[in-house]
Amino acid sequence: RRHHCRACGSLCCDVCAPDKARILPSRFGCGEQAQRVCTKCLKQLPVIEDGVRHTYYQLLGVEPDVTPEQLEFAFFTCTRALQPAADASSMSRHMDEAAGLQ
Image 1: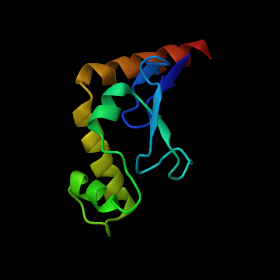
Image 2: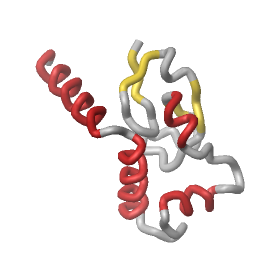
Image 3: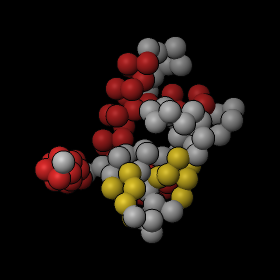
């Protein structure tokens, strides 16, 4: 079965995304519960633990009082840096194929 990594959005199989990690911000309505992440992101993204959220803001280069829009922009800028451009075009191709099936 195919899954999306909740950190970078890439398509992964069960073997490539066997782990779950707590990541912020959660855009999937799951609060701070552990989310499925690919092996690449598990190694590269910091795991957010209780009491160390400031590390997350430092990684993104923003202050804790930023607007949700600024936080979202910083998050996506960071995750895009982890993902090669080819993955983005691959994702677009998969979305186009899925749209054609409807």
